[in-house]
Image (cartoon, rainbow, N blue to C red; front, top):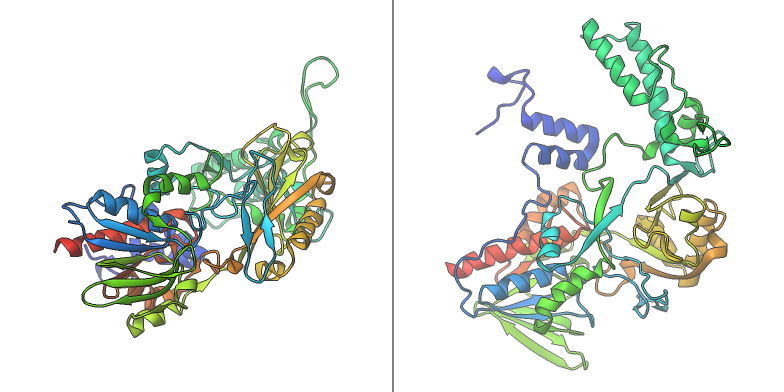
Length: 535
């Protein structure tokens, strides 16, 4: 049904769904648009909960899949169930693409960099690729359930963790502050100011007296205000100076003293607060028990026999008769595999340098997609001081140190002896800058930053493992970064096949950087390919 614009016709002055979405974009950008579309039933994130039903048989048609990441293995798994003959070429000696976890024995050598071997203690790991799953990524959850990959909660927000901002001013600058205290004081003080204004009729709002009374009641509840004088004086949720307990000494407990509104504002720590969780960043999320690579290994168990490992693609050639892919095998010898069609999941950052006969518009589109520089580091600590000394169980430490980004505390292994902290998670120019350092220098940089927040950081550090995804040979970036004009001018071209070549991967979704993007892109392309074969 067509929707009329609000500025003309009988619908003038009416807020249509289209106009509502446009206004969301003006207020909150793309993320707000996605959330709004999801709420109205037009969501483009994780649009499907199950793979397409491929009615009819592939009748032995041969498919060459390039790349054994989640997109490639999804395509291989679903196509073989429908009678297709599938061969997968993977440049690495293992499957999973960026779905990796660093544990003892894992090695990596970045382009132009030193070789690293992870020497974490047995049972410890860091997810240096994807590391969390939102509840609405139903495609990812479809396969964790199908393959029996057990999940546990990922603590994505923790009010007892710290916020550390150096660039603010006032007495809170350069100090680790509990996030829950900032949340309570920012909202409490704001609610107090607003409640007093509303109570005196100081707002020019079309509100009845009953409306004002109810709104003030809401603010009292939201900001923990005194109903008598509408004052904010703290709340037990921000913590106690003297904790309540048994016996006569602890007494009823003494609440901590709130920070003033001025101090909170000038510290700029309020910037980490949101009224509700972001669309992609809920308060609690999921992670596979034992590491994110459990998902890749579950796929590999199903399709590993189809994969030719350590096979580096050199040339992709297509004709009216089929597709021919030249590659070097695990012995470094030239080889060729032929098929009726090709599903290519190689990142565009890598694919655009491979010789392939595709149309000029297709090549132009591939060359106009940038990839994000991304860096992560895992730091093994000999003692879980963040739990024992600071009572923080999972969650992130938010900072304004751009060359650190955020730190994250493990959401697994609670109360065990050791643990691995995500020491930094960087993007863009900062990730590129830190990636020029040696692994030892990166570790020293991360430890020095952590020491500003946790006095126990340096003395407990044991070993590190880092990755700069823009320097990893078969990735050359963390994920695709589409700009608005790219989505308009190039994205549709790459979503369609060029002859017998179909592209898939997180880069061909609106969920770039997420496993669900890779999976659902594969679902879309195999549905199109199967429809073509059946026709």
